[in-house]
Image 1: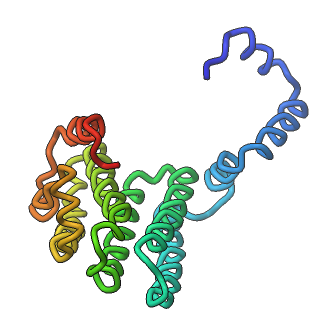
Image 2: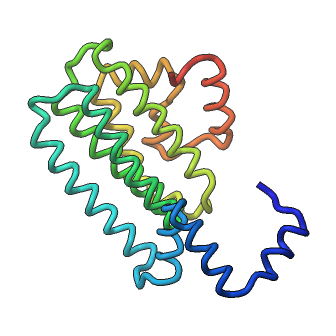
Amino acid sequence: MTFDKEFKEAISQLSSAEKDKLIFRLLKKDLNLANQLLFELVSSDSKEDRREKTKEKIVNSIVRIKQHCKYSTPGMLLMEMRDTNGIINEHVKITNDKYGEIYLQIFVLNEFLQIYNEYFKDCSMKQSYTLNIYCVAKVFKIMILLKKIHEDLTADFAGDLEKTGQLFGNNPCLMHSAIHNGLDVNWLIKNQIPNNVVEIEKDLRQRGYLK
């Protein structure tokens, strides 16, 4: 949304008290913005501090999830993955931590893939289809994020990406979905993400894949 010159001038002419009152009214309606300003203006935490606290929160959640896997299903695991992704999204909205977003996304994916392989690896394609597609789409998202940061930083994630590729390879059903939906796990194992991965992902979706 853009604001015209007259509106900006009218806002600038408000008194400090009026501006403060208006800001607090707006912040009550936008919790994400309020938390972002709280982090930027008040918190003594760095992005790295906040990232580690977010990771700790995720780890505690994963421990709880593992305790209930015997009574769970691929669909329930998918719900947990989406909830955990929400924790990452909240962290990124507050801190704008682009590096941390990639780090946490790969960490979470690998943790859940290990759970998947341990408890649900032998489920049928029908039972695990939606979970498989979600994991494949998540890899594409991670690869796209990696292409947005400085090339020198991508080496930091080579080992974790290789682990992701191996976890896919250890799950025949998941690998079938990866191949069918245009994901070459060698991109991960060899850390050779295509430069045109954005176009690849867009083309796949237009042709009805990753759904």
